[in-house]
Length: 501
Ligand SMILES: Cc1cc2nc3c(=O)[nH]c(=O)nc-3n(C[C@H](O)[C@H](O)[C@H](O)COP(=O)(O)OP(=O)(O)OC[C@H]3O[C@@H](n4cnc5c(N)ncnc54)[C@H](O)[C@@H]3O)c2cc1C
Image (cartoon, rainbow, N blue to C red):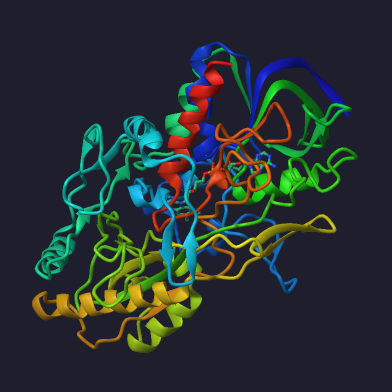
């Protein structure tokens, strides 16, 4: 084993929404920062979705195997590269709602109150939207929380055929709203991500070092177990120990939990920061169903996502509990729906016989329905003889089913006034399978009580004085909104704290 001869003030592991953003925030402080990333830079032609063949499933899946609770192996939908999952994400950066930070009753239980409130996050949401050049519009969505500043860029216009659908949705007294999207305004890679807005600006500073293809395999503590002394990484065929004063994990909720568990030692026999056996538990990922509307006309298949509907976010006339969030997929030639849902494809092929995959995609308009999952200690990341195992049981399913059926009613009404649809009343749909871990969160929940949380309110582990986690692990509940903007805002918040140490 080699011991690196540099000593760093801060070591950040991972360059996704959490790690990349934090690096950008800390770089101007002059602190010596080392960033370790297991992946490499993604080739430009792979980043631009309009050039990418989304039917190739492998593109969205890591070349490794995890295991489900029955022991079946699967390739997880996760991206190991500079920028992490933000290199392949949908680029929708939306705020959680004010009530999402409170205890919210659901049919199957209560989603827990956060000790930090929307008002604690609001300044950082604003900072995040400015940093990631979010294009959006306030004031159109009644569920939208207070913004202390407008979006820095105006909302992306809907494609003409999407605009006619949007008008027909609005005619039903609903509130279709432009989706907030991060755009870098670069022709060759239009979506904003944590490489563009986090890592690239951080690397302008001489005090920041990035090592790619550096897989962190373990954390070593001092003899008392109170401090992480060294970070062990496999760089090429060499194991190297890096030392730093502060260690920040940002590997994503599943991989950060796995790394803590993998780093067990005499002082922490069940894994670092895991005296209460909470590390890896309460894994959440939102319920997501893709719903397809069948067109008689052909579309390009490569237009951006642009609209969301939150009228059923907190329920509807027939259901007093939260149902969730709807947004369109954008053109299906650039959305992950088909890559993730072979069952959806076979239903589509039956109702539109004689068409190839691409022709099917170009005769379809896609929607995502997304619903909160409640934290469940039995849904967890576990290591089984070194193998990463996800034991995960979906919950709150009736709320999600109701959202899906309510949305199909809306689509049927749309088709009465908009031409170009099959009007068959058939909407091929499919829930995403277990390997889709896009919205993973919650494995190291945040709170002030060490008996019920892994991280304190600054995202420092209760048990180790210099160990922080700033990816999506910290979420006490997941809401129905995709986690990206909240991960970014939280990294900026924790960054403020670390700047002053
Ligand atoms: C297909 C897809 C679409 C999505 N669309 C949206 C969307 O539209 N809006 C939204 O808000 N969210 C979306 N998400 C979710 C969003 O991408 C994540 O919430 C966000 O990226 C999480 O940030 P993170 O920092 O927790 O982890 P990640 O972004 O996953 O970053 C983790 C980083 O750690 C690195 N890493 C992992 N383990 C190690 C290790 N042992 N050593 C060194 N490095 C390591 C990884 O390579 C990666 O760079 C989507 C995700 C996917 C997959």
